[in-house]
Image (cartoon, rainbow, N blue to C red):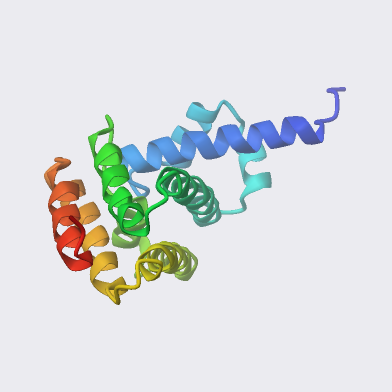
Length: 188
């Protein structure tokens, strides 16, 4: 009789599963990746995978939720190192430029998921909208601290830079958006 699976082993298995799913879904697309590929990449049997997530859609939502926490956390850690409010807002675009330049950058995981499943999955659509609201709220907090009422244009420039970089494969949109935001903020 096999030993029972500990809580720690379950946590590690779940993380390995999410790591594999995130890598495959982001690199190749959600619909292009079958659960057998997720199984092979995670090293977990399908039966175990389906104990964690009853359906592929549930796995996609969990992956997007985890990615959201990490992505926005990394952004905040970078931006909040800067003390000047205007420079903080500009630091968003510096961080985006670094992200765009990383090997394997394929654009926004939430925009990608929306493009694949947004019209057919209420759960994925809700997660995409939740991420975009949370990102908007982060931008809004940093922009409001400047005293300049330009939250929406700054958010749209950030989103536009992300989509443009994802399509073009270049990091230049971050710098172009940064220059526009500097003008909006009246930053030197």
